[in-house]
Structures are given as C-alpha cells and as structure tokens.
Image 1: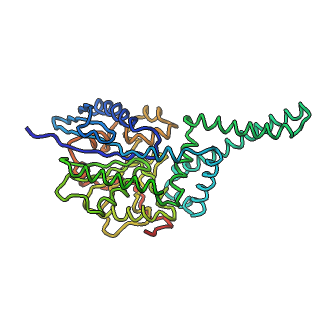
Image 2: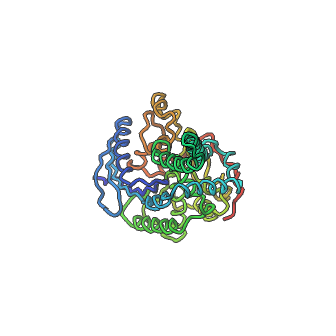
Image 3: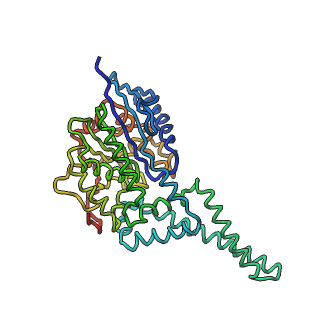
Length: 399
C-alpha cells in the first residue's frame, strides 16, 4: 500500500492578538464547508508532534490520501504588548505613524499601487481624530451648559469638558471590536515604529521561527509548507531568507514551499529603514531551494492585490524566480450571494484566503494545505494572473 503524502504546514499569522486556537477552529469550520462544496474528504484530529500549537488533518482527494500537520508560529504576545498603549500614547502613535509615511514620501507612492489599502491605512487616523473631535465637542457643549446653569462658567465647564472628552475616548476604545480603528492604528504603528526596521523582540522571534522550520525540515515529510498571511507574509520572507542563508535547507529533504496570502509588503518595504526586508525579498526571489506562490485579490481592500511584492519594492534581481503572483479572483470564486453577504465586511474579506469559496477556482487553501501535491507541482506551468502590477515605484531601494 502506498503511504499517504505527508506535509507539515507552519502558519505565520498577521498582526493578531488573538490566541492561535482561533485558526484551528477557522480551519475546521471552513475546511468542512470547502470539502462539502468541492467533493473531497477532510478529517480533523490531533498531531503526532505536539510541540507548539496546531492540529492534524487527513485528506482524501479522489482516492489519493494525504496527511498534514499544522503548527501556528505564534507572535501574538508581541502584538499584545504593542497594543498595550494608553489613550495619549495611541494618539502619539497616530501622529508618528502619519509622519513616517508622509514625511518619507511612502504614502504617495503606495497610492500609485492600490488605493484600497492606503484608504484602509488612513481609516484609523481619520476615525481616531473624529472620535477626539466628537468627544471634545460633546464635552465642551455640556461643560458650557453646566457653567451657565451654575454661574461658575469655565471654572466648572473646563474640568467637565476635559473629563467628558476623556470618558468619550474610553468609550470609543471599548467598542473598537466593532470598528477596528484602534486596532488598525496599533497595527500600522507597529510596522512604522522603526521606519520599516524590525524591532529587537520581533527579530528574536523570527530567529526562533527559522530554528523551528529547520527542525521540521529534518523530519520525514514530502513537503514543508510555510504560510504567511497579511503582515505575516513579509515576516515569512525574512524567516525563509535567514533559513536559506544559513544553509539549513537540506538538498535531500522535503520540498520547501512558501504560500503568501493577502500581503501588505509595501506598507513595510516602502519605508526608509526597511533595508533588511528589501534584501530578503531580493534574495528569496532568486532562490531555487523553494517554491513561492503569492495569492491576493483586488477585492481585498486590506492587501495590495496583484502587486508583485518583489518588483514593486524595486529590488527585483535579474535572475528572479519567484513569486508566482496569482489572484484569488473573488468576483469569480464567490457567488453574488456570498459577495453580498460580505459587502462592507472588509476585515472578513481579508481572511477569505483562509476560508471556503462557494465557486472555487485554482486557489483552494484546503487542497493546497491538505492535498496530495506540493505547491510547486500544483501550479507548475502557470503564469502570473492578468493584471499583475510589477512596476517599481518605491523610492527607498537600499538593501
């Protein structure tokens, strides 16, 4: 009996403070739905290797069997630490982040690629300033009214205005789970805090990720597939570049593959001090040790849809091999009913790459991660999707 195809998947989340079990539940729920739609079988269970957090899945694709074990490479604690800011500190982040993108000229060059993610980046700035204005106006109005009623004027009205402004901002922050303005502010501030350079805590975590992938590559797998979503997509680039530079990809080991999803690479690579990331993009794009496929969608306003992350960053080498840039094509792979249900839910659309499609096309997250073919074989011979943006518009190209 032929043994099943064996894959190890290591998933790098984006800027997400939520514990990794969320990704297990999402995979099980959406995987079961995709299997029902597409007619293959998925069975979920535990992993043999219990190191870290993850889960197992058995796939049956028209009689071809596959075993996959997932592990989430966790950096939620770093995210949580960066989000632990008070109200004044968050507004300080707002002005520093705005200046990082405007002062460097990055914002205006990003707009030449896709306006959707730039609008998404401006959204928390506009919303937080509007919240401050509304809170201050409400406080001023009530303070003025109380000052007149008591005859104490601004001796009472001033403290009331300040107190109510502060209370209003606390209230806005408490309901941010519905509008994500404060969350996104912390996200963009984290990227921009070092003008694109990784902070020391993140550098240390990336080194741990590289060590873990090297450990997994020594196992009996047919494929080791690294998946990076959102800002995790550019972290994956740096992790894999470090791994290959250090000579830790065995020539006779499992095939190393990289699937980047919904990337926001230009938000980091267009900043002046992102030399490390730009060098990693240039290096990884020319390596034969791995297969790299990048999937985005123009309908995802939070990612740079069909923007080639290497080319637009201005670091494409003459011997470039990767990535293959593909579209998830939401307008074709999601029915009109599904698109209507997701209308306005831009954050949910940013996670669609990890979810079921009711009109699936070439891109199927569950067939890729639990099916019996490597990423390279699955997309062998494919060209870039039409509409790929490959013009170099980045002002900062030093590596």
